[in-house]
Length: 344
Image 1 (cartoon, one colour):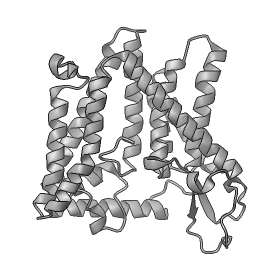
Image 2 (cartoon, helix red, strand yellow):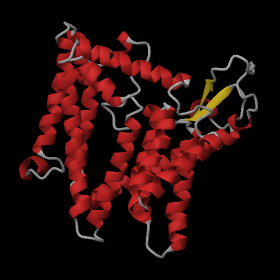
Image 3 (cartoon, rainbow, N blue to C red):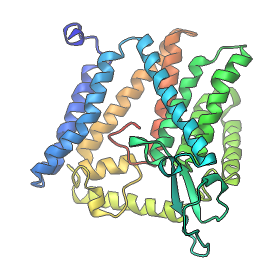
Image 4 (tube, rainbow, N blue to C red):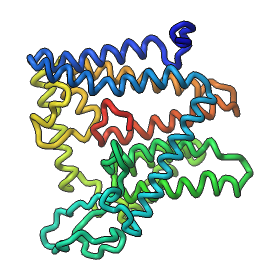
């Protein structure tokens, strides 16, 4: 009631209009095809994201609340990451927390039974991918959310306090980063690279930064952080994604305004898009894609203004920079994941 009376929500009227309009397009994308039951079901599903946005914008109206919410999120994800690492190395709850994925190599004989401890599997037949629980059950989704949480650690940094920084920034960052490598998510590795690029480019310069990222990418493949998969378009998984992107453009071509219908991508192709932008314009057309991108742009501009124009050294400027970095990590990972309506 306070928010409605004082009109001091964290979001602007533009955000609410865009989000409500996107909700209507989600419904219309199915209504225009005569699938009214599916349309109402899609509204019910998408409404969870809308409700979450309203709850956040109504309650996180001060920097103190924003910081507290970020700390809770960071603590929960750090706990999940630590448990995932423990599960990978000990076998504790491994059937829940570690995905066993068969490699596409018929020349390797796979064990008849699931090895009890993933870290000790020497068969070479499986790719073991740490994951979370609930809607983090997919390793890629879990990795994306971990990447988004990394910038929050910078809130604990204090200049000159080496021991404090090692305990509260370095060690948690290393644990979360190691868990990201255990997810074997290539998109998440690129997300970390994007955070590093925007974080250190001003200090090292563009050329040195790209050189460092190139060395890091080679190192990640050497230590097996990609699960033995390369970044080449000829690799089978990557080739399948490119095919899915092509099919997404064909869906857009067949129905440019409202798309093929919310949630209907896999009715036209056996794989999901693995790209949030492609998934968006394929399912809800150019109209829905325009609204979705508008939400991203307005959000990016909002946090970018705080990060750029708040007083130097202020808590507001630090918060803006942290949220902006997290946003960049999300956008990078979203390019390789089908997460148009869910921010992680």
